[in-house]
Amino acid sequence: MPLLGEVRELALPGVKLVDVAVLPDERGFFAEIMRRDWSAILEDEIVQANLSFSYPGIVRAWHRHVRGQVDYFLVVQGAAKICAYDDEEGSPTKGHLVEVVLSSKRPQILRVPGKYWHGYKVVGDEPVLLLYFVNKLYDYKNPDEERRPWNDPAVVPVAINGRRDDPRCGKPWDWFYPPHK
Image (cartoon, rainbow, N blue to C red; front, side, top):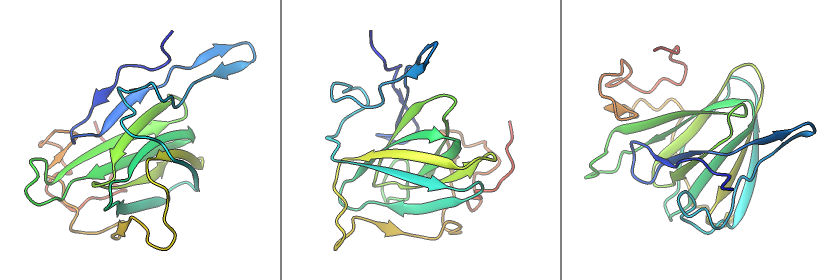
């Protein structure tokens, strides 16, 4: 029995989202969260796992990886809005932003190639535990990372999740923009 849902390609190449099957019983539940044979989502060899804890309202953004790191995110407690932004010159998706809310209430894995600027904001009133797997070991002496401020006014999406009619398009990204439909 496969314990992985349908893999969905999102609006930036290589960014993928998949539901993780949760098998409940009278004791609780069981879920596989990463398997080497999940080639539909797992395109990389995982070499390190990390756990991040963040308080409500915290924003951890923006950063990217310049030497090919890919992140696989899973929220195990709380809820987080995770975004990836393409600002690469000449890219057909330059200015596009992907926004996904991951929650422990619906386990999902989000794959984000590190070439995109990415980060997250804790949403809701409980802290977030974010488990993430990477395909490159962290190099303490020479980190594979570039950073920019979480509120950098140069992050101006022209499309969000493939939509150009989102009212947040054409404006500096606001992590605290009120939810809308």
